[in-house]
Length: 109
Image (tube, rainbow, N blue to C red):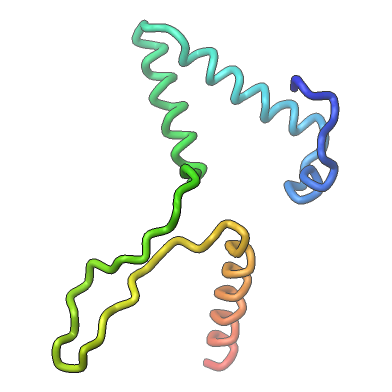
């Protein structure tokens, strides 16, 4: 790790200690260094690195789109509101809500 200070709240949220964080950083740096180069092993490591980055679900900061690709309901003049990604500030709350409502359905059955 290049920085000497680590956010203790982040470590607590992740359930990690300093050593586990260091191992995580070392794994990413190792994967990144293996991906540098042009030989077949580097290309394979680069593909693995890109897959790992994509699996994080990160995306560029851009405005959310609110358009819907569903067909208009001509009979009742209705449209589907479309589905959008939940803002990152609310992801944890949404998961807790969905989990709570699904547990409620299980208990009532």
